[in-house]
Length: 166
Image (cartoon, rainbow, N blue to C red; front, side, top):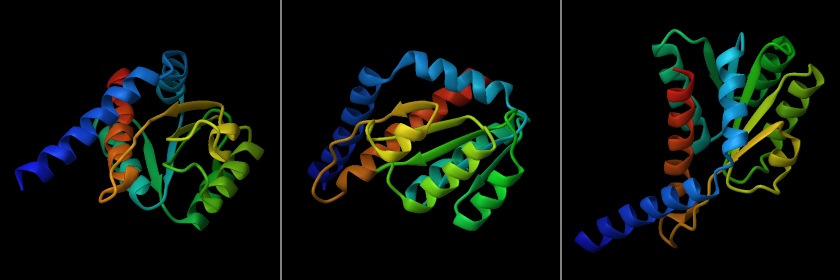
């Protein structure tokens, strides 16, 4: 058990170190400014990314900053229809390829709403569509996959954004 725990912790620590090493600080600053100045902040994500979005919304609401998390594709489209250029969408996707998320981001962009993406793949469809991209990086392991380590890194990106806005 000690070996398992050590491997899991080291995989997460490595993902954090690697993400910190590749984090685009200019993009981070733009994302923090967008989140700080937005009238409304809508966070989109599915599966594990939905949990990251919910965690971020919890933090922002705790300091009185309006934010909402959506994990349902239809609700994302309804959210997109109500947003304006004064708002911002934070789209979270490890792969950056979820078809429902891409559709929602297209709807958001039709209203000229800025989009921040948090993803593991800089060349993914989500990343190429977003106005601001924050990349995590995670190698993972055969048992946990790279999603588990990426979630840790993505949560830390969101925590850093929260602290910057606070």
